[in-house]
Image (tube, rainbow, N blue to C red):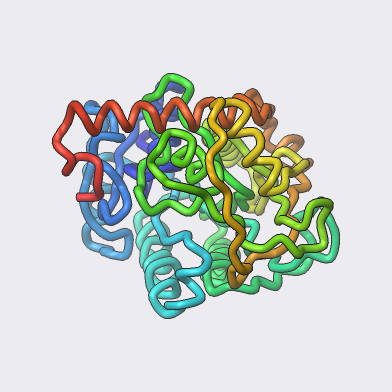
Length: 339
């Protein structure tokens, strides 16, 4: 009973691989390594380089490793990039996922977990956001994810033995507390990652995109979830499906948010570094407030957060940035960029 983790050499996927291994599960990773790093995959976990839309390859992996469940993390996630190049996002996120879903069903996979996003809600009518609120994405990234959710929904109706959970992430941050993995992509756009890079000297400053939003300090508010807690939420969802649970979607967040300026202040406080901050124009596709209503992930899956503390999230992110600095001095630089 092996679990296939697509995108398992990336930020969230690698933490999922670690969580599965820690739980005693057998894992195989499929990643094209466009944004992933082979060294984030444990040595005893098979890593196959390739595309999730390569149906022949996926079929062979399922058969060779006796895969019984798929956790699908592979895809592109930068909202402004999706605005600039929407067709790439529809191909990489939606078309590729379609091929993966078709192969999964053809090979008898019963349980499928999809890495979705709060971006499917667009500009929400109220907060916290609940799963039954309107889905009106304002970026091609959000639309590409919502289209995949629709495909999963329709496929589950047509194939009663196929069940899925779509987990809608809010803002993922932090790193494995044991420093086995963390956000390593040099062009990452995650706020806590960028602020941590400024605190450790990897960046000269940090930019705040817009200070005129309808919030308490004029900057966007987001619900930040520790990446290791997020991996545990997936494990809970997998256990739910394997126990006979029905297909559903659920938000992944803590139910409260922090503004951009509050995050910057936290990084400065924890790091002890007063790095420069510059104000820049708003970015396309950024809603003012995104905070999760998380009753479903807690009550239906039994998920209990263990790391819902901003200072721990920031501290783990900072510790990972410092580890990357050590790796840059100890290893060939090629290991620290996607293969």
